[in-house]
Amino acid sequence: MDLLYFAWVRERIGLPRERIDTQAATVAELVDELRAREDRYAAAFADLSALRVALDQDLADFDAPLAGVREVAFFPPMTGG
Image (spheres, helix red, strand yellow):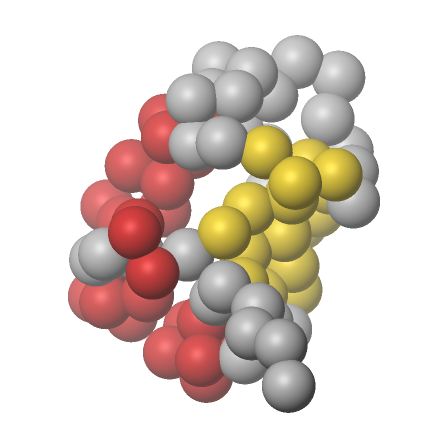
């Protein structure tokens, strides 16, 4: 599965993308796995209310299932202007 990180999420983690193998069933379980990896992931995912997620380029919730998903993107909420 490919993970994409945008804006300050990318800055905190230090990577724009990575490929991982996971047994997580939902986005929330994936986030828990990532938080447990290193402090930089824990910092990036400390406040999920400040994050949005897209699965295969479709906006999703953190309780969304990951079955069949090839790409997960994490980014801050978008603002208009």
